[in-house]
Image (cartoon, rainbow, N blue to C red; front, side):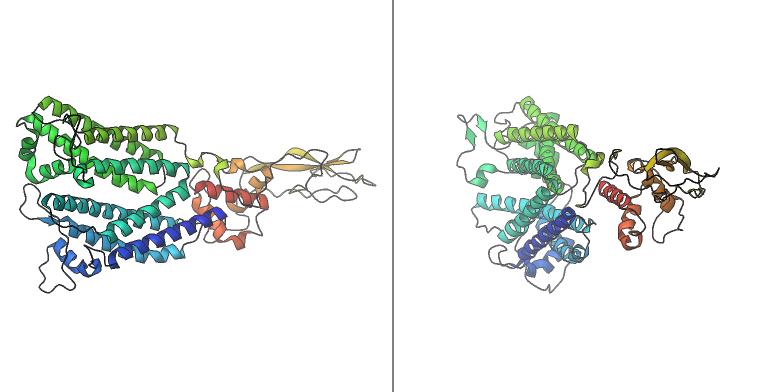
Length: 513
């Protein structure tokens, strides 16, 4: 069991427990909407989400509401209640998943997978709730109403979960984790560009350079408001905002809404990518999604200028979001171009501390180890026993002769015609060396001849019979379960397998993982 895998399991376990503690604190600390307890409002949130009319709902009434009526419908749907129900559900699943995380072994990825699934689900749900909180705050700021931030949910639960994801990313990925962190920060900045930023930070002015450049997304409107208008009022409302009633205004508002929606979706995917394994396919998907966001923004800028309506111009935040999308696109393209899978070379494998390389060539001056099929040196060269014929044509013997230096014999016996041993007058005894000539694959090509013969007899020819619970080794196939089972039943196989072959098993299992 390698120290590296053990430390990774401890990292997954500690960060998962801390993230779960933050999620529970968000439910049970009296910080919701000032000093309320969110846990007591879960029954009412559940009934509101699913439209249940219950006379006496246990607990307290939900003090957060974000009703949304989509265009073409008449019934409002409360997204705040939905986010709270999903938050409670993910937290409950996280508590249940704590059992397999604690019980998992370090050579398995159970702890890491469980932690990743729960934390990413919680982060996405809480990001959805944070967006709702910001929208409610902006509404209250505009109307002059009082507003209390839900610090327990967006501060402790959301912030703590994101922090644990970042720690896992740096602990697992090192350099790749840093690049994911950079993309994550760019995505967060892009999301902030879609809100009414000047109202959010309390700026008194919304224009720059003698009112020639709006700080908002376009004209005096922010991106999220444009998206809401399109979803709730349809294309007619969008045309009114853009100052054009023809197809040009429709294209412009759709491009703006798509850009804002892609900014939100891309940031959610950036969070999911923090703890995920980097693959060529995921990097290609990153290129596509950033490219779509950049195209939507470019179309929006062009169409706003084409409309040429009075007072309608792309704002500073629209250009900032476009620059962020282009930077993310460049980063994803470079990472995809230089990407190399970790398992492409054997040197990437994790080696045990007692690993040694038994494939070195021994010089003639050094003592030569006794061959696997050669008899111990004797005062007189004795005829070696004939090799056992192979059940399958896996190897041919003899092929080469390997010298073994021995003391001169007092009297050499005449060699029998069937022997595989020859002697010379200078005291060198030549014994037959078996050479593997059977089918091979990437694993067997890294074995020495003696290890190939040993492996072939034990697991291909099965001279000792079949082994229970051990899958058959398929040359050139997927043999991850085979190598894993060797170490699961290590007590059975350790006396049967040489140290060199056991080290090669260990290397191969690390490569496959």
